[in-house]
Image (tube, rainbow, N blue to C red):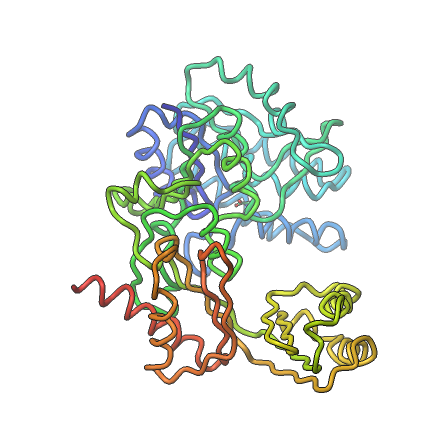
Length: 445
Ligand code: ASP
């Protein structure tokens, strides 16, 4: 059994968190590959090391003194070193960074130092081998990760029986220059390493016990999701629920490696398992009708009506091409006979809505064109709904009972989610009523 374990910024925010990481890693010998983010916030007022390094770079670039910001970075690592009794030569590490900053400022190099230093400290503390991500994570010049090359590079480190600590978030291009990923990219490093070493599971340790059925800012103490499929996860994240970097899914999904989201502050909680097929787990505990409830506010709906347009070939294509010309991504297109609604994020048409309307009038000459905004989309996601007659009826009647007017209904044939459009005002109420009916009530049966 091989596990790749990735610890997010809050899991390595200070020496107390390092101790928790050590307990977690050492409690399971299969936790062989340890990926770390840079130290995150210790408290609300604290700063993430990566944020400080980005800020530092901006100061250097504009010729403003960066000393006080860089000192905050230094203080954090000196504190961790002293608290944990490490011998790492931080003076030397910081000298190298400052020299590089003066000589030839390279933003990616500088911001990657958070993960690099956290990795060095953690490797020493765990008695593990440190592997610089620049030596193993290979980027092509186009910014894509080169899996074959990464595989070749990592291979020689895999001979060691010792545990390996690899900093997340960065790698190197073919010419050796350091390149960082997008924010939150350590999730991707973990996923790539899990792919390469054919891990049995990719554990992603963070500060929440996995995915929750609903947003805790709307539902007090929502229950967790024990198991979710990649497709459900995609629906949930697209509609606003976020724990994991989107690009972290592909490398593990392509090899059918499950991701286990875990909480460093509550290691006994099994968290959420994300896998392609949850059927084995579903046999032990059948899934609820609702895996998760999520959604977003602030959509705009543009509705066009024109008699006999349903039989007019190319009518919908002409509407959609107007949005394409303005690079506006379309969320959904509910259609009835001769009436077409186009739903887009309001911020996407902030500056071009009236131009789009004029173009639509010219292109398709509608009999009527209406714009409605302040629309929220609520997504009820659940593999347990598939082929269950009456599932959608039960949701919709719940909205009716709570006097929530439904403006839009959307469900595709895979039956994985039902998306309902309500006014922004009813957004929280809609999520609450579904949660109460399908989670709280079921739990108290
Ligand atoms: N430290 C980086 C960030 O803050 C990457 C990561 O934590 O995954 O975005």
